[in-house]
Image (cartoon, rainbow, N blue to C red; front, side, top):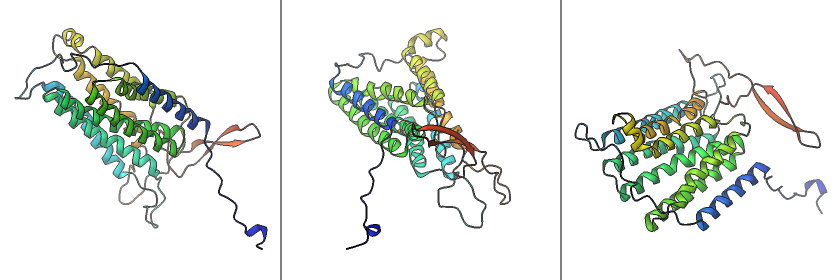
Length: 311
């Protein structure tokens, strides 16, 4: 018989935090609404955009060209992400530098790569607006939605919450788009867009976790909300600007600008000021939360974080 000290105890089950349970309940409620909600047909005039002008032989030119900011933001983010040191990839002789965790890196790559896909899909759709093009436009939009919601959940709740949120949006978003293409039922896609943004808004109220890529979610929501308003006022804006700009073209620019908080958060992790092999200064101290006491009281303490800054 082995001594008691050598007997292997069963591995403890991973703890599920209250915020993770809240996310699960929110996902279940949104799924129930998408599946059991009333039919929501698409607009009969959904392809009737205000601005049909041709420029340099390009039909619907401004609606097409206004997708360029998506591509610029996406490519810029991918370049910045490449510059950020990966965990475990630093050579021993070099001074220590902050490393971005693998989950943040994967979700950021999904977000910025999705912006590039969104630019391509939306530009192709606006060249010849029809249901077939709109299918690819919306499928491209699923990718940055998944990356953003994953970053929001990871930076406010936990790594597994971030990965789970991204996976749910990828699967649910693709299913919603394909269901719309098959049946014309738009409610599941509306739930993915608007319901997902409501979840991000709720996550914005939670404190940011140190050592993660934590964009300012309030700015993201504000810009995205403004973009949806301009989208709804496409024709009104076109007439109000003496047919210089349509609401839909402005919508593209504002929606692409919503990537700026993520770019800003990522730029804080990229090495800067590196000249002749001199490493940048260490990141400033950032607060983190520890749990103490019988009532799980939280104490905020300042300490230098080797994982990097929060934004």
